[in-house]
Image (cartoon, rainbow, N blue to C red):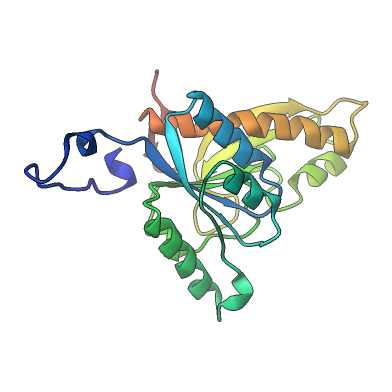
Amino acid sequence: MPELGAPQIWDAVDVPAEAEEELPLALGVLISGSGTNLQAIIDAVASGALDARITVVISNKDGAYGMERARHAGIPAVHIDPAVYGDYRAYNHAIREALEAHGVELVVMAGYMRLLGNEVLRAYPHAVINLHPALLPAFPGASAIHDAFDWGVKVTGVTVHFADEEFDRGPIICQEPVRIEESDTVETLETKIHEVEHRLIVEAIRLITTERVSIEGRIVHISEG
């Protein structure tokens, strides 16, 4: 996928035959919590439903259970603590260095509860995606599920979009609605949202790995598979 990073150039004389095989797209997954969406990606890769590989998982929280999920799957898990760095830019520079060190081609924000800075976004143009538990542009921010429920909307949902320098604003790749029934509570709505998240994040990655995604301004076009 040329748009996700420059191809590596090899000297044909020195490259063994097996190195000539194109590897699946390398994912770097950013998390902040339990990592259920990370697990959905791990499972899809393991089952062959997703032609990709996770080369690193990065968390801003050392105690995030998603780190254990990564280690259990044999994936490098890196904790980058914002408190260690003097400012926001230095912290995001450290994230970029970790992603590049692990050969990441597509950055997946799967429950990562911080704004990603230009230090990463400019290094990965149109190659950073974010999962959000609402139908953007409605209900941006960290409390989207509660906000939608408290507002009294009848339909909310899940969005996967390209990330930019502002929260929950980038071009939308895919969305799926979730109805809020009279019997729903915030807890049951969260459960329904999470079920859709697990499916939609995998679908968005699959669309990118199969080169079906193109961007024109704010519009993401999905070609027929």
